[in-house]
Image (cartoon, rainbow, N blue to C red; front, top):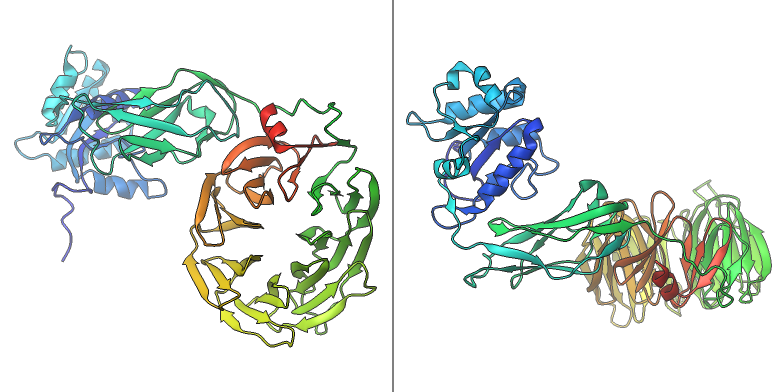
Amino acid sequence: MTADTTGTAPGADHWDVFISYAREDYIQARDLHDALSGCVTADGAAPRIYLDVSRTDGTPPGVNWQGFLEEALPRSRHVVALYSPTYFEKDVCQWELHEAYKLNPPEGGRLIPLLIDPGAIEKVPYIVHRINWISAARPRWIDEVCKAVGLRPAETRTVLRFGTPLTEAIAGHTLPRLKVTGTAPDGAPWPAGASVVLTAEPPTAELTGTLSAPVTGSTAVFDDLAFRVSAAEVRLVAAAPGCEPATTPPFEVREPEEPPSWDKPDHPVLSARGHPVFFPDGRALAVRDGRTLTFHTAEYEVGGTAELRERPRLWERGERCLAVADWSGRVVLAAPDGRTRVVDLPEPHGGRFNVPGALAFAGDVLYVGMWSGSVWSLSLDARTPEPVREHRAGVGVLATDGTGLLIGGLDGRLTHVTGDGAGAEHQLEPVLLALTRVRDFVIAIGEQRVHRLDLTTGRLLQVTQPVTAISGTLPGGELTAIVDAAGQGLCFDAELAVRFGFRTVPGARPAGSGDDGRLLVLEYPDGSHALVRDGRTTYVSSHPMALSPDGRRVAVSDGERLLILAPEDLEESS
């Protein structure tokens, strides 16, 4: 049995009006769309009007547009064709017109030509020449179109209003929470399932975030909006089917400013270039410039240096110490006073990959798990690294629980190794991305699920991963951050409850956190960095940036120097 694709029964798969137009006549098509959207159908509902670029009733992104058109036309009760000289020069327009003609019943009424340019009269094909058109030159032509497509003026229209005035914005920074409310003259509520769509004029300001929000209690809330680029005069437009749209007064989207406080005596400045990383005390700093690591004490004096052999792969903090491992298997362990130990971990027998898979501290004893399966321990006081265990499945993620190790193998199995070498095993999933201990729980982040192991009871809780195509994860104490490739991010707690979500630049990854994960530093694909507080981007720098673990200090670079200040001072300067 095959489905009838020519019917127009009511439902989510039909349109009341299909607007057929040439791209050069988009302004007229959009105006017609807006005018018809202000009407209602015979039963008082908001009409569904197909305009290919409409956010609500147009061609969905990512679909085959030609195939979608082939289905949309027969599912439309009426087709309004905008006659212009250009319309009859477009192959797609001609195809739409002929398809609409074939669907037009003998008595007519389904194909409604609208003459928007008298110069098109001589180009009208013979096959449709006998179908009367409506001329846009007539005074009340829109009323004629409404009558022809079975629409009538709405007796009452919900009026949209912005509840939060905007006077300016900063490119790359999250806007304050924006509310759009709807008020109907007769007090009637919005229909169930209604949503509000936001756009920016001009579009070149590149408004990003969740641009369509559902209506709850006559209000739609937008939490993660931002502009990618600066613009001198921008307006936000809120629209919803059957509603009077709202437009903000014009405002400026300005470029982010560098902090103006480089010369304040209470803001230390280091003559150091590169990527900063704070020690656990939140004062001493390691700065990586290429493969050179320079360690600055809490008094911001150079305490020592070390060299990596390859690009850094992993960073980890202990009780006092900081560790970094590069792709070659070199590990640098450093104390805040500048003492360092550089270790090249031995290559395993059999030539397996000598790549560090994970780092984990127990106090200031560092455990290093390798893809080859070797697990080593080292400290500043030990002369050589000590072999701890051989994990046959290789080590992808690693954590300590005070008495033993939790090893996530490259086979997706989590093994809890106690002091005597025995331990329980849990098969999680093929790829594990991160492992962290939060109080009495160990949280494992996989590509498909988030897993929580209760260390007291041994109970394993698993929930479906809320985002896909993960580009970065970062445990940050109480909160763990996840960002996907499209720039959708979220932070969840030890109960696996999402505390807040955020929208950022596609390809961004979490690079640092503070204040138990409530503050984040994100690294963008172009190398710039952003400070995110509770899901809102509050500062963007074109150079590297780092947070202290307690969230009280931020180190921001101008390319040649590092400025140390409170995050609040940085955010206020922007």
